Image (tube, rainbow, N blue to C red):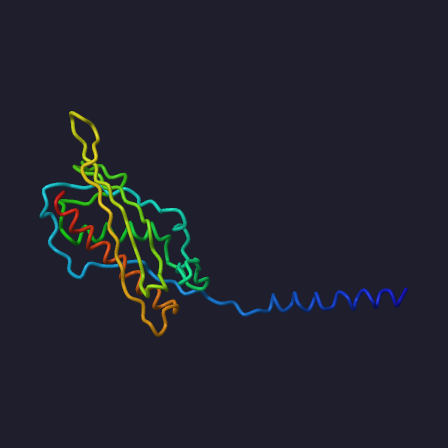
Length: 204
């Protein structure tokens, strides 16, 4: 009986030690980065003739995670598990676009959902790409925007639709470093914002 107990203890000991090793692993605090590109210069507001209501930005499939994403040269996708955005990418892109359009001074006012102000235009957007392309050595971001206009005769109609894609280079010496990944993706999204500003200028 005693021999049987000693044998069972010997069998359980390695598993117990392995479990202790997992429990005692050091906790790694993830790095967190704001996805917040800013326009280089804020222009006076209210130069445009119209007001615009900006709805919540949607996220394309696969872009609901906060983890920084990258595409390897062989086309497979990966994530940096110890680096993430401070907010979901689509939510951060919406706030960045709202601030960018406001700083561009294109419209009399940029309204948020729930506002009681009358909007001449409604802007719907979707974040469709945000990753680092390691094979090409650049970060990639892309958004689509649909501008809607309410008319008394025809109701709500599509006034315009835009698609913008931006890129930014990754440093060749450390393309997978979290700081480099985040900085390049923020710059790529800023490139997208600048292109959308040019597109939206005709709607103001």
